Length: 322
Ligand SMILES: Cc1cc2nc3c(=O)[nH]c(=O)nc-3n(C[C@H](O)[C@H](O)[C@H](O)COP(=O)(O)O)c2cc1C
Image (cartoon, rainbow, N blue to C red; front, side, top):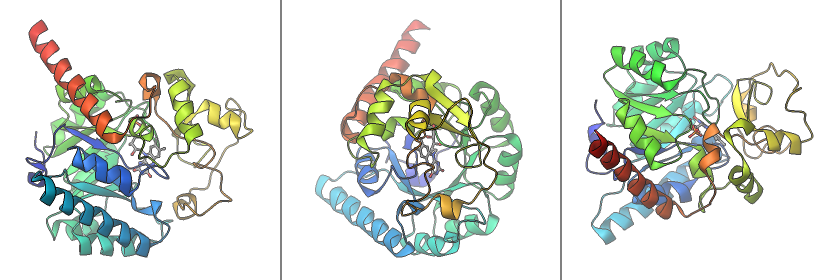
């Protein structure tokens, strides 16, 4: 079960802090990578391709200075590209990625062979989000390096498959990197994902509640108070089924049990931070079922240090019990 060679010697924990719309930016990425976990953000979190370019320069400059000062290696960083006809920035953002030789590109929605080739041309790797075997096979044909299995209960556009069922099916056909996503909020969960055969755990919701995340304070507080049962899985917010906090749906004046149907999918419009008029994701907040165990908002460095202790304890506890 391989990790890309570019990751070797750079990780202190087999984990990725997942890209999150309106939540992750350079601050969270820099601190995550310095703590030995892969840090990522969606390209669309910056309002323009020029601004995205500047963010990459900022991250690279900061990490290079930190490596020089400490003599340590930072974890690789990654960016998320929404590969969908309604995102007009895909090509321009890809050119910036190639210019910066971004180590990791996470693609969502479309797995495109030409994009994978462009990233491979400079030695980068591509991980692709999937929720079922059909999408996994299509990504395998596009020759992606890794598959992110977005399972039941995950934050964002979650899947419906149980990880115990989905992971072995993918592993039987794929010898690249497998990432497990959905409800992993502590080190024990990371150990569980590894025990099941995943190479890396992929954590989203847990990183919303960090000091460096751009989530509003009310969103973070709502997460500390919510439990798994508060997550509503609905296509009503963005046109694709996703996980949302019941309390935020109510806060936006909507009835979580009687939501309107939304048919249009337009990521160009949907996923644009300056699009103030559109309420989805801005007022109605996405989170996964892993909220139940989150009751704080620590700095990223403290969170990762705790995840590491929990991970090691979980593995040694399991070894001693068996
Ligand atoms: C608030 C929020 C925003 C998200 N935005 C994106 C996004 O822009 N692109 C993406 O690929 N995934 C996005 N996701 C999904 C995460 O990258 C990841 O797959 C998911 O959070 C993992 O499940 P977990 O939250 O249960 O840990 C988002 C998730 C959340 C909670």
